[in-house]
Length: 167
Image 1 (tube, rainbow, N blue to C red):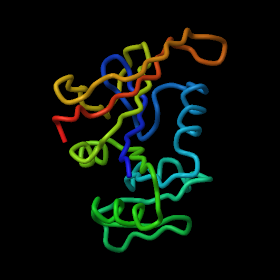
Image 2 (image 1 turned 120 degrees about the vertical axis):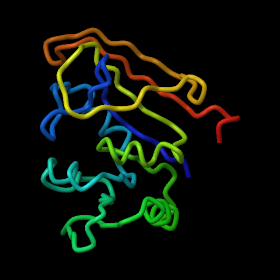
Image 3 (image 1 turned 135 degrees about the horizontal axis):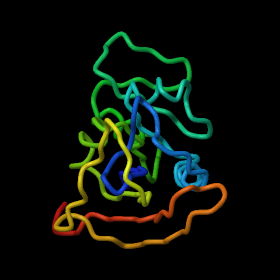
């Protein structure tokens, strides 16, 4: 099973502000949906609560330290290893880590692939994604897009894979 992270990041590595996204990019939302649809996704409690509900068409796993936390529309776990075990036992081919920042950081050592939307803007934020270390990650795909009536910034869809010697 492949473990992937999917994230939208500004040029200054901002991924969020006030428990939300600092932009509205419909094409990025569509890409996120296309990649994660039908798969298990892992999110942190705050990220789940900011969304307000489980994302449809996916098995939602919420990772939290709170032992009393429950949700009506997904699975709650307390250790990253449990998310991997649940997905593997279900025959999952690709498990997606969808945020927030603490969950991305926690899962980075076991991540095989990163789907990164690079938003060509510098924004204020309070939540950041780590720098992509080129000693560990290899860019395998990049598709560039120009801003349009729906998407206010230029952006790239970039896929990174962990280098074989960095497993």
